[in-house]
Length: 63
Length: 148
Image (cartoon, rainbow over all chains, first blue to last red; front, side, top):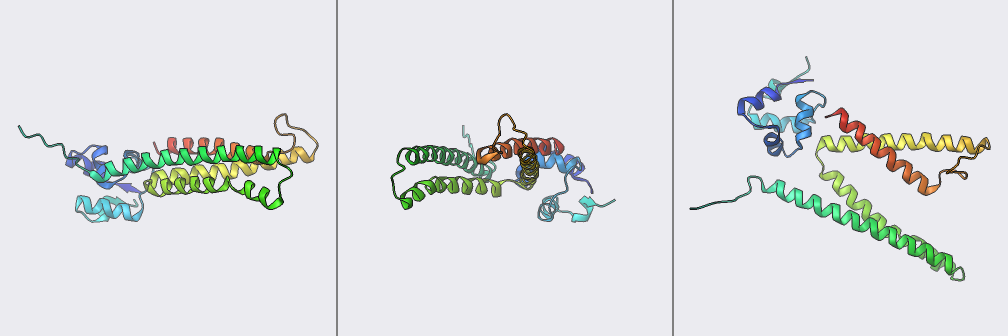
């Protein structure tokens, strides 16, 4: 699954650690999602969408 | 000059303290289980004359701190984030399947009359625990590397 997490994080100028703190996950989880080695659970995906205030399908796509 | 030193995320600090507290509790319960196990072995060896009910009780006593250790482990597991939890599950699966393979291999050797140097009577309980722990460590390392 593709995602725009790295780009979204860059627009806010947040480090992986800052984003990890905001989502209450580890930095390793953020890195694994950004490098598309790990697909987040639905609750975490919704949490990310709420944090960036954009629809979930604008962050994650199956293409 | 007014300097404020508020924690930007107090939940994280609390989670860190809880994780540390759980680790210490886990180590203490494991130490207690090991100590009580060794004492119970000594008692059973030196008092063969005791009644069967007393011997059964002494045999089962080390299970109590063992169960409390497992409870601490499970609490730690459910406090992990989802990727850490997946890594642990993959590590445990690797250990489970690996131990079954090793046990089967050792039993085949035993059935064929080939005595293994360290396990002439099969793996035994200690051997199973040790094999599981080693394979769990390997499995967790592989999974951590995969998601790095």
